[in-house]
Length: 260
Ligand SMILES: [Zn+2]
Image 1 (spheres, rainbow, N blue to C red):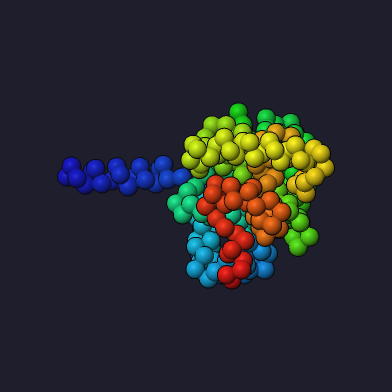
Image 2 (image 1 turned 45 degrees about the vertical axis):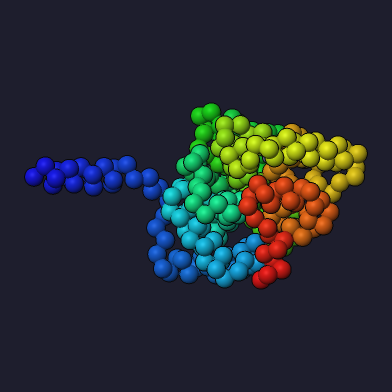
């Protein structure tokens, strides 16, 4: 009898506290997702078949666990795919890693006013990671999200940028140094490398977006966009930064594209 009651309590507790606020992905939706990934996400297109299957699984768990809401817009499957891809790309090198500091993503049709607590400067009008009472939330502009995955986005991707901030924030500080992902001995060389490159940007000798000059957190997010969007170019022009980011993210996207 005791065990039956205990069993009921455990099952009841499971349903009561289960943190599933996203949508259910059935087989049909999984097929739709696969097609959307193949036609819209270049990072995915370049993956090996084995990695593609892993990527799909992680996209599915993301949309099952995270609530995606639209403000004045209806969320489409493409929105879900682009948001989930932005989330999965930076953490794809860590098979079991999930964002502990995210419950929902709010999508605005275009830009939004910054009457929120947020990190960083005016660029965050395209996206922001909530702090304070907005903790656990990310806000993105659909226009910026879609542009980041379009053919002519260059080295930029707002979705990836915001998720890199979120990753950076998991150690308690959005400071351009993701301590959770870096061995201690690489922290100082990484800071020095960032400062050297910031100096070159200031002098007009770098092709990295000058928004990176805002602070180390923005440098890290902007360089990461470059790393995932144009890996061969970053490796060619900034081999040391490429190597450091490759170590941080545990990924080698330039090599992955040549394998595929
Ligand atoms: Zn930023």
